[in-house]
Image (cartoon, rainbow, N blue to C red; front, side):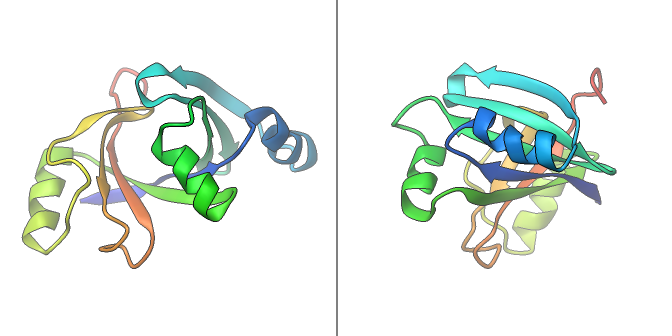
Length: 136
């Protein structure tokens, strides 16, 4: 069911400032940037071996990443696990006791996504992802 770690997401105040570390100091390659208007986020993906690090910068004072930064400051926001069939994975994990932020998959930065509540993940927000086959 779970194929691999797709990415690790880090909440940041500024992608430009964060890239001074990830790109300039560590030498990681920026592979994609995007503005997610509906989520009020700017995102940047940097390649780290076989996986990526997703930098999340809020563009509004009224979104979950802004609230995360206010409560915890910059840092690990969530991990993303890739699956072949998101709906089937949600059904299977729900039967095992998982609870999701939304009852149905939704479009995310990396295809269809669903988030398992951090209370279920022992304090870690876990994203399940079925990649967009046109991009994968």
